[in-house]
Length: 205
Length: 331
Image 1 (cartoon, rainbow over the protein chains, first blue to last red):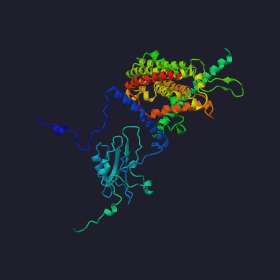
Image 2: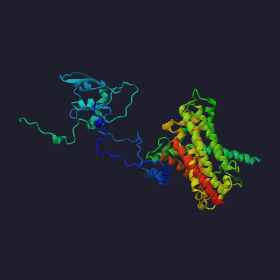
Image 3: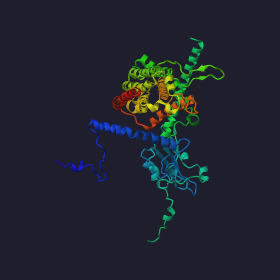
Image 4: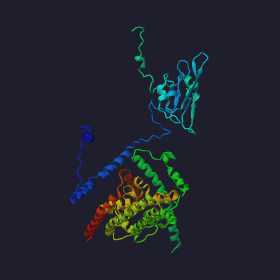
């Protein structure tokens, strides 16, 4: 026979204690006394006062959504973006295909070829936004911080399958030239004090 | 019967019908706003400035909505039930003097702002309002729906219980006045705030307010249409304007209860100091309507068994004791 006492013991901590709740009255005198006490204690008016106070204070918490928006976390995973390299303006994607491999809903497809200089270049890239579950694995696995999640969460489509291709995802050139491509502040990005943490790799150790 | 009287009555009926139908809509707007402010929300904001045209939007929606009659419903009764709700609410208003009598501008024609000045005014009003109970009862029973049936059953226990308290709570002030006419009751309280019946009959006033809330299905006693328990109770199967008639009836009843409470207990349309009588009663009614909304924001509603307990074990004995004491004092 197994001893269940230690499993049945629900007092996982000594911090738990029973509240000192008054026992309900049994006699009719006690019940009557409780009714009178509750009637005259004015608890109902406390409730009235609280809601009236809130109305007077007029501390409204409503966000009128299309007109006002709450700030969202930099780590929020909304529509994907592919960044451009700050130095050259080329897209940062090196065509390694890790995002395609890791995508758990199989919604990324990437096609590469050898470019004129013998380097791998991205021929085509598409994300099925209707399938994407916005888990963020693609952005997390990307070695170049090329594919990232942006902040734009307002998108709809008329069909289930809704593809975003390279031209949709890469930062448009005019925005990039205006210097408006925001660095990705989310997971995997450089911390603000990254420069201080950099040390030169020694040649001899 | 002179023709001027008939024309005057018809005009008054039309004015009451239009004004209170419109007020029912406007009150829903104020209800939503007040509840929202008390819950730190904004309420309707998008239709018109500060959402004021929400009333019109709701009206258009109600009028153009498909009128669904369930397949197995008892159709004639199902269709007629909402009419009871609105009709009884408006018939009850015919016995209520809304304003002090006044002369039409530029003439010496005296208008009595009461449709039918019957000498048993308050009995008529309370009686017709009680007939309004048939609307949720018939509508709920004819709907062929479990929630509606439960709502109808709750209607009976609630309305029937609280009708007793309404009657008993009104008897005590009526004993003081010695007349059932609402105009007599109003005239009895002439001479400023000190002469209001509420000071002599505070218990009756509170009892009447409580039972008034129960009769108009307002929040502490809205168990006939409590969403979390019985969907919308008797109104579950209703849509469009049929449901709208229920709503108009409810809000019209709220106004009747507020007017009766002001007339019987709060000095009616007697002037207070420099405030003229007509304005005084409108202020009182506005406050009572606000109280309806305020209470809805603040208090939870009660279980059916608590309702019955409250009515039969607390309020009814209190009302009887109040009548006894009033009688002894009067003798």
